[in-house]
Length: 139
Image (tube, rainbow, N blue to C red; front, side, top):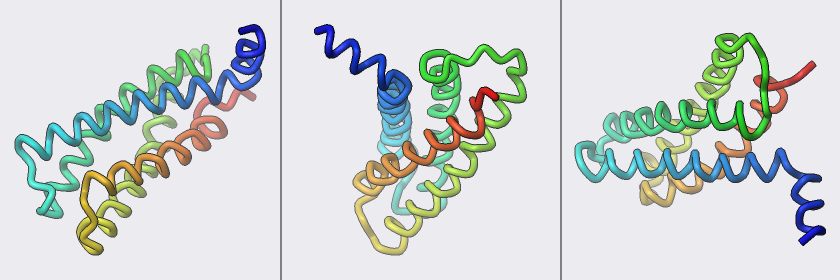
């Protein structure tokens, strides 16, 4: 048990990021699946992107607060600047998300739910790098 604690504290930021990232992915996927199961058609390229955007807004809001508190333990007083950087970095990965979804679903006709899971892995890695080095970078 002591070895496990030592291992956790050695990699605390990454472990916490993976946990928060997993929860954020769960929020994103849940909202996306609710959208395409109830009122949006993933067969329509426009409605596919609308579902993506709705899930993105919900996930990013969740991610900002959990990353700030539990992962990067930010105590910055410049909350609006930090949040602005966070949302801007997430816009860049949203565009990446939308592009990959368009390519895989609309052009290559991959199942949208499988494509969304694959995209989430790519986006989670990109978001960690941007958060660590751009948003919550303590100088």
